[in-house]
Length: 456
Image (tube, rainbow, N blue to C red; front, top):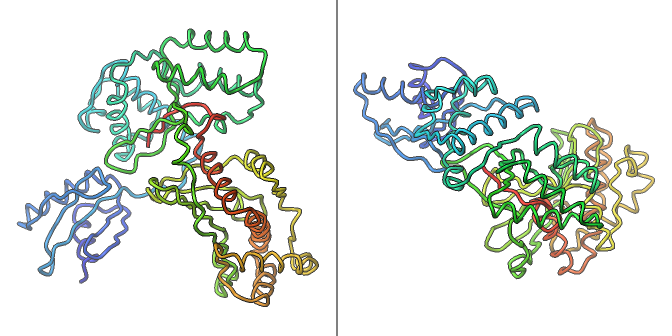
């Protein structure tokens, strides 16, 4: 019996739900209600006189269990099993749950020592009414507990009176930026999920006064006022992400002038990858996307993923960076309309309409010479890796994918090919500058965006 099989057999003594086991000396066990399973397993180990000890685990808020098997130490790491994609209705309930936790902590002065204290709170039934799924989710109870810890640290002396996810200030600001500034999706400008305000009516009155006394539709003035209110702790927008570590991290965005020390923001494009190789088993390219790697200096590498907005059918491109400082630190899609407008500032006219590109083998072959030229431009560029070497490989691979059930992927690859072909024509300094801007756009950082805090 190997290590994984042994650990799985131990867990089965105390748990009969879904389980996956991975690893060799550090065994990651994905289960439901991990805290309860850990407690039951350690009780079982005590009863069977099996030596064990609690041990800290990197990037986990729950300690692991170290045991000896075959004269070697094994560490069991407990992970809550993933429930897959979450729909908008569930996300709304979870975010309303966060607003309830913030209210209990910052307005009602309710402090929890651990996630079990939330269950002991006399008002816990109110949380259940907001998000019924919390009853069966240690994961979310722990998430709320960690959020509460960090929010108390940041705002213990605040005097917030409203904690709004729907209605109130959220409806007001969403309508304002749509009507006044033409921003249809509020999150493109400011991704705050919850607004914390001190005297909401007074906050709105001050915003109205600014707008009524200003004849220009300049969102920069609104952003400036909101920054002042943020610093005064009168109005705070919070963008929520599920907590993945031992603590909830807090970061303020656009509260100060992000470009005041511009020397730190001359990012460097170090590599571009477009995988044009062919996988004969999957009958498609090696990957569906392209990548641009951007060195930000002290903040590590940003991996810009460029791919179809929908991986299952023909669709336009999206640009989405991920920070290598955190495996889950996806920075957000760069709003496509803003990306296209920034490209125009660099005299790049890129057509992001998938129907303007070949959709089948016949259409591709009619324009093959055009795309072979683009392929060679990329292949010759020292920053670009195309994964193949010859024109014949390029043509054969493209035709093979068009003739498969993945024709939409070939359509997307041609869009990526054209986009990359256009950006490599920029002088290197300009290309660096372009991706510096795109990175900040995806992070919602800069004068065009409103101030907010990330809790993640």
